[in-house]
Image 1 (cartoon, helix red, strand yellow):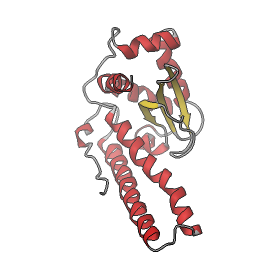
Image 2 (cartoon, one colour):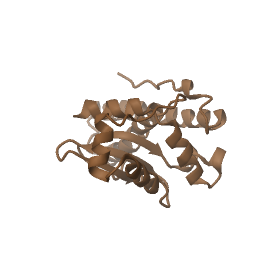
Image 3 (tube, one colour):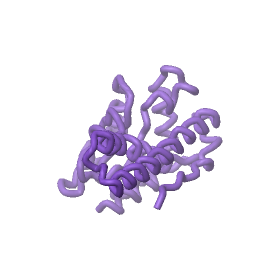
Length: 196
């Protein structure tokens, strides 16, 4: 069964993000979906042809993490954005966890933004570790490197240049502010509650 690209056109008109930037970003995401499917098909065909022990198969396997995570991280990223501003309710389980771990929701946001402001390209992911009952704001350098095993991604921000350069040039901090204003906290809170 092939993966199908999700339609995020409902984000067009999002404040702080031009339609041109969003459409370019959607096209990039669709490429990850296409390449994920191609790699699955190629690897399955190599298995059927008894070529699973070849260097070519190994390279496809290594590439798969990049393409699959590129697909999934973009789905989570677009999925936690919304044109309608939502606030994280102070009585929500996620807000209470932020206060417990960071001292306040504002301090958690500050750490999230500071993580995104670091030099370099990658992703910022707020993870929940169910085993230790903790939240982490984490930097991920590449799609397939730096993920915390077994943790649930709650809030995802793309900080590769393609996510902001069309609208913000090198002003990543301005992009981060626009992203923060676009967060659909209802979605993020539901991800947290589903992980409990």
